[in-house]
Every structure is written in C-alpha cells, then in structure tokens.
Image 1 (tube, rainbow, N blue to C red):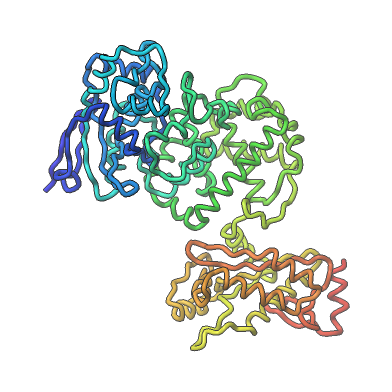
Image 2 (cartoon, rainbow, N blue to C red; image 1 turned 120 degrees about the vertical axis):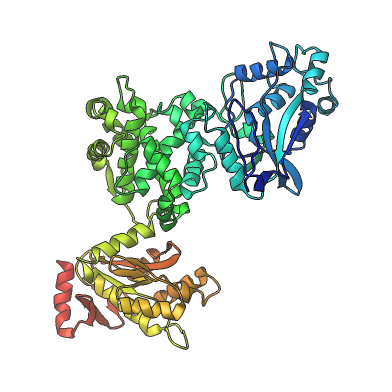
Length: 602
C-alpha cells in the first residue's frame, strides 16, 4: 500500500513513497544560529550530481535576508541525513541558494541595505571574530536585528533514505515545475546514466570548477562556483573559455547552457549518423540508456581525454593570434556563433580523430579562417541544429582547414582509440585481407594451458610477411579476435567467456589467458619480451612493433593489436623471408628473393 506526504514549496505538490520516508520523515524548525553551527562544523553537504552552481546575485541574496529580517515566512528546506566522514550530516536537497545566502551574510560577505551582520551578536560568530577567522565589516547592522535574524526559525523537512536515487528523484520533482531550473539543469539533475556523467565531468573540466568528490560542504561550494558582480570568489566568468570566445552569454552559463552545448557535441561524436542538435534528442539520450553502450565500448576515460584533446587543439588554434573564435570568424554581428562553433568543433574532431591528422601551424590556420563565418556560415547557421545542414557546414569547414593539417602518428594516446581502430581494421579486412590476421590468443587451449611459442613464431612470421607485401605496406595482427565461428565456440567452451559478435568476427578478448598472470601488465610484458628477443631483422622492426602495441578493452574484452609498416627493406624472420598469399603466410624460396627486393624497392 502506498502512502504519501504533502509539502507546499513554491506552489507545487511533492509526493514521496512511504516505504522510503514515512517512519524517517521529520518536519522541524531550526534557528539560523543552529544551522550556522552546522555550517561551521562542515555538516551541510551539497551533492554535485544534482545540485547546480551557486547562481544567486547579491540582489537576490539581500532580498531573501530582508524577508527574514522582517519575519516573513520562507519556503521549506529539504535535507536528508547522511553519513559523512564518520558523522551524521545534512545533504541539501532543496534550499542550497537560500542557505548559502544566510551563511555568507552572517560571515559578512555582503550587507543588508548597506549594513553588515554584527559578529558580536551571537556566540558562534564572536568566537570566530576573536580567533580572527572572521573580520567585522562596517557599518554594523543593529545588534538586536542581528539577534532576531539569528533566532529566526527555518522550516526543515529532514529525512533519511536507503538509496541516493530517491534523493535524486525528489530533487528532480521539486524542480520540474515553475522556473527553478533550466531544461539542461533538469536533465542533469540526478542523471544516473554514463552520458550525463560525462557531460558533467567534461563541462566542469572546461569551466574549471572541478572537485575531488561529488559531495562537498556548503562552505566549499563558492570556491568552485562562478563569481558575479560584487562577489569576488570562485571562478572568474571572464576567464571561462565560453566567455573568452564569446560563445555563450554570462546568463546562459549560469543556466548551464555550456553543458547543453557539450551534450550536443557528445551526441554527435557517439551516435551515428550524427543526430540533430535538438532538445528532444537531448531528452532522449538522458533518459535512454542506449548511448551508454557506446560509452562502455569506447571507455569513459578515452572519451573524456579525446574530447578534451580536440577541445585543446581548437582552443590553441583560435588563441594562436591572441584572438577568439568569434573575432576570427565574424566581423559582423551574428546570433549563431554557438551553432557555428559546433560545426567547427566537429570538423576538428573529424580531422584529428577520424582522419588521424594533426595541425601543422596553429597561427596560419587561424589567419586563414579570418572572416570565414561571415562569408560561408552566417547565411546557413540558423539551420545548423539540423543534421543535413550541419553536415554540409562541417564539410565546408574541413575544406577550409585541411591544408593546415598533416598526417600524425596514430599512436597518439589522446586522439587514438583502440576500439575505433579495431572496428576499422575489421571493416577493411574484408577487402584487404592480406594485410590483416587474427588470433584468439597465445596460450594452448588444452589441459596444460601453456604459452604456445609456436603460435608466437607464426604471428611474428606473419608480421614480416605483411611488411614484405610492398614498399610502405602496413598491416595488423589482432590478438583476441576469431574470424571463424568454430574458433569462437572453442574459446567460449574452454574459458567459459562469451565472445561479442561483430559483423563476421567474434571478439573473444584475451582475458582468459591474461588471468594466468598476476596482472595485465605482466601478461603484456611476457608478449613484449617474446617480440624483443625474436629473430626479426633488421632489428628496427622489432623496435617499431614494440612502439606501436595497442592494448585496450572492447567493452570488457582486452584486445592486443600488433602493427608493422615497411620502411624500405625486405624483412626476415630467422634466415628466411616470408610473404602473404591471400590470408596465408608462406616462405619465399631463394630464387624468388630478388623479386621480393625489387617489389620493395620500386
């Protein structure tokens, strides 16, 4: 049977399941002085998973304190009792802005009608004044008025919950009506999927308001909040990337529009074909867990690192001439800077990540784009939130920039991802099968389970054979992938691990044989040592293979990729040359060696 409690907050009804609340819900009043004591003892907690930044202006704070000073009623504060650092603390569900306004007024951060709280009016602040932790500002507010404020009874709803998700849901319901939160803040409020988590982490990293933990004391919130006029704390609004490049207004940053922009870009990177940058699509990806599958496949760490690497290249380009994106691209006013920014960011992403290129000269690239916004983008930018027009814009942007990009080393860990490389290799192997080979692993799948040196020798011979295909020939040998169903079935039966199908391949991973070692590092070291002491000549190819090893996870499957590229020599294993005939590796007879060298040197 379901019961509910009713609470009036800004004209909305809140219903909470009695199973989580009934015996644990307490409606009580606490004086401001008592809550200030909680504050000083760092027992008022903010959870950044659902709470927004401190955004109230001085005027909003003063108006709220004025209401208290004349004894007007104030809305209920919702808090939850939680364990925090071995003690019981109060996590603020609703009322963070108001509680911050109260505590910072008492600390003397701002005045009421030009008068500051008298620190000698209550014991807690007098102690802090005597210890020189707080400084008295003048002129002082009448002491009796300060005592009245300190004794004001704040209405608190105090609850305890077994699960964080209940708190998340309550917060979201509180703010789902009226104009408490922006659309993006509501999406992020209590977002439990990986997509919402990545949006928040990347956005915090760009703004600079990062914190070690999701849970912070209210005391520390101002250090990671964006400052505003008359409040000299936290992060300087003018120094944030979005403002420096005139992409988003101050007010829009306060409403988390920067996070909305990051969310659109992440959707465009993770979803194929790239979806339209609409509110409906964002709502879908915050509520639908399908996008989390792609995140798990690529890996959270890689996505964050890659996004920030592309972002950094973008930033370095438009700051190379000490300018900004807006001033470089536009000489005339436009309302579509942020939409054009999305086009260029995704063009950078395509060139840097998909095409594995790098910028040859930041300053020259920046200069080449001067006025490009007015000339090529403004007339179409209104529709850049739609897929087709945005794709056309991306192609135009890439065309303008491509001559300033050159091929890069694909082992760049920030921009290169093994998952993307693996799927590209599997796709290409259908038409270029001589350059690719696949092995389930290096260990025998028998009663011994020993490392198979014969298998390793075959792998190394195959790599030399791929290098001998032609001058500059490049090829890959993938460990942890079966290209035959029978091999996949045998692996599953032996290791009791289910492979992941991909097209005509089966991603087995090497977890089964890696488990025979103390760690993945030890497993990888074993393979590297076998390569290091192999019979490949010239020895520079041994160094090249070791340099280009990729070891990563495809979902939860560890994969090993070995790569080789011809550098103008025929490559030997032992005293023999090998070459590829289709998907087979065969020894080159002595009478054919001259022909092999001729092919390499052409």
